[in-house]
Length: 125
Image (cartoon, rainbow, N blue to C red; front, side, top):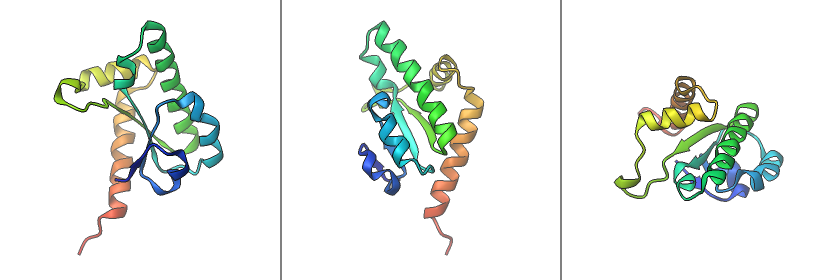
């Protein structure tokens, strides 16, 4: 999978990693063709105070809604750079619920998206 933090590359990547959805939103709308995944990380929220976490949750929900309406796949990852930063499946589900996202629906959509993206790259002999 090709990953980038550069919005200008969205048509050439599988996953776009966002640091600030509020600032990127208008640029994304102009380039929106769908199909790619847009990723945010829990690691970003770990560094915030309570008000910052509340904004992060609201922004994550807005990003999810944007992805749903624009044909992108919403991706929530731990952002961990070591095992100590890993997030359990139960914690992911709790965070998704806090964002107003049904975890079962999210994981089902994520699985379908991954199968589609990887299926385009892997060709049987």
